[in-house]
Image (cartoon, rainbow, N blue to C red; front, side, top):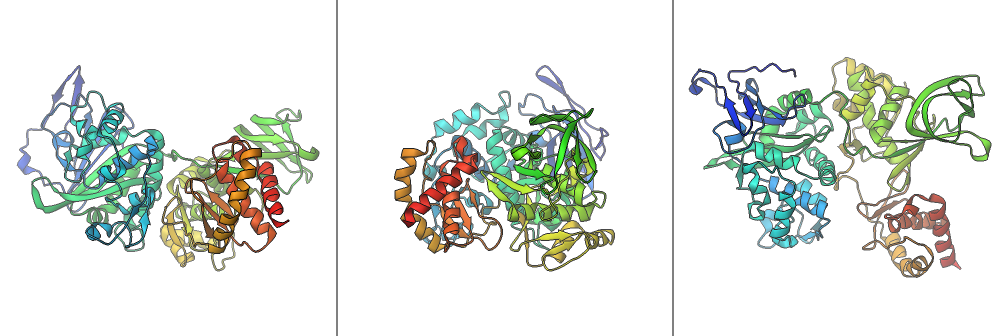
Length: 599
């Protein structure tokens, strides 16, 4: 964005001890058009500075200011003085507290009684809603502090330990009674509150909030332009209330984080949906400019890749000396029996072993690193919109078809799966993967081919043509996969769970006997807090969701099907122990438990 300050008005605060100097233009304020949209974020070029932009009804920039963030005693200007309602943002702060404190958060059960109107944001009568889905649906009844048993003293101690110590305007955050929609605060203090969120809690909230944005991301909906321009780079909680002192005027927007963890806030006239629909393209353009190239998610995920899985090779260090087994650091050359040689470098993400005397390179990659490497190997990141569409397909294929090892995906580098570059990803491929971070297609299996399209299969050459004809990445996906839904990977409502009653009944009948054996002979086993939900998997590899205690399997009729279910149950039971990554141990015990039950 540069350091130039433009617009009808510009102001700069200069920090000098605890004082500041305010420079204002001589033109009268009445000459300025009233802002319809306002945005605030922290500068990346100078971390102590804030960026404040205001736009008119047409989305035209009327004011851009760069402000030094000094001692926040009250003073009459812009994002320091302006009062904005929290609206639904209070639910986000309660969510952050619950996650970081590991505080029990029982499901809210909808009754259809006197809270029927508010329960419309939660669930149908007789249904229940958990923490993540409550944040996605903005269910205020779930986050009510009294229901959750949150202590005002514990709340105050938590936030006071993390809040800006010199920011007098941030005191509302430590007041549990302030967690309500009508509480007003300055945009700067809301930004500080978001920055005060502990890293782990912020990461969990960010993943859930990505799902919130995609609730309304269908073609022609409120969020279409914002999603098209931002992809998976924006994780915000929307809010709507009224302007302070003006109950007839709606006021809404969003606040949260960008993909690199930096906090942002924006608001304008109308509800949050109206603001996002009206200014989605402008928001995306402005926020994209604030991100440094190749920004990556704070939660990169885990993918284990068996490189060159079907091609025998030997590995040499630079200079021709055979590489030693273990973690690879430096420059190497893979030499294949065909005579082909591939030089590459590793910074510790690759490991060499020689089981049965045959060289094997295993990579442990971040999820977006993996997607970028597949783009470099299978496609061309220069075809931006086509590559963005392909990156979503790559990620979706991985989730659907890879095996699971703990919380890692496990997949081969092969033509039968996805080919993965062993080289460090290119900058352009990283940018493509980062743009669609956390996004996938749900509802159908998906794949791709270089030239040949088919049902649920994208041809890369067709995607290039669409891109060159001006079609955006999301349009390409919806045209190619009309039966699939573009969703967030971690959407608590997005991953379908069709209850597998037969499997659930069988597991319930087996676990009492299993527990007696496991507690006696398998150190580290700790039974899940409740019997896991068993979901019927229509395609792909069976797996367990450790964070939700759910197991997805395809069948229960055969002996191998039951061993698979036992295997995934053991992953849940060992989730807090190093043995959770020992596939041989888990498979041994799964077979032992099931085979003994058939005797």
